[in-house]
Length: 355
Image 1 (cartoon, rainbow, N blue to C red):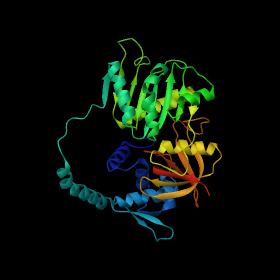
Image 2 (tube, one colour):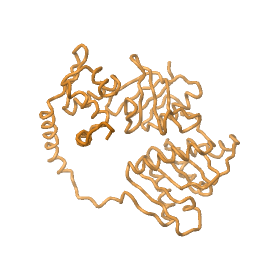
Image 3 (spheres, rainbow, N blue to C red):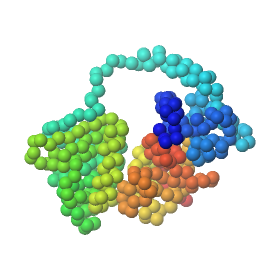
């Protein structure tokens, strides 16, 4: 709730989010209601979003039955469906799903708890190996350097599966010999950084599971150390974000992979951002065809990449990770899952050299 927002406003926003509306969609819908019908420019100004974003959001709200987009009006307008009518329609649609969902429902065994305390070093090592081997998109791991050889083969196999792999080594020699580091880390990770002191052990996989523990939990001899395993998206994101925003930039860069050959398509946004940036660093003019989560196809030359995975960092705020394209109308920004600063949430990026 903002300083100027009443408790009733906050409750209304929270209830609307239960229908799957993002913050930007709620802002746009609430900005439209006092007008009944308004141009996309007016809605954009009142909602504090770009006009391009309103086009995209209005389409999603229309699919939910909350608005009607008047495509052929000049200028283009958006009309709010009477709220009582819209809510009744949503309720009917939800009710119609019940029989099919009941047919598919089966009583399942309780899932693994979202938070677990791990006190056994052997259990933690097994979880680490299992997490790396089972990853589908991305691995972030921070371990003491003496532990690295134990997981090197797993990480190499992950790179062979075309996963995005970040490694942070603690208690490490901050060797600035680029040739030696390349021989050691090539094919094991996309980026490796080193820290000469101890740091908490962590892994985060696919934004779905993570573990964080005492610095010497994996390699020390103390029996009173422990780790915490989490298997919930937001908790995993917190662990991942903490390391990327704090320990990662404070450590020394030891190795960065070469950019993947083009053309190349990416279903994992952070991987697309990294390789787009690496190609830009080599002076390659890039063209991207991007599919948004809503299914919209947008293409254009890449004008900017914001990231802090490798040096030099180009982000303007902590954890900013985005790609900006030039389109016929204006620059358009794309973010990953849950993007709210950028105009679009990205599902797929296809990258090639700009002809």
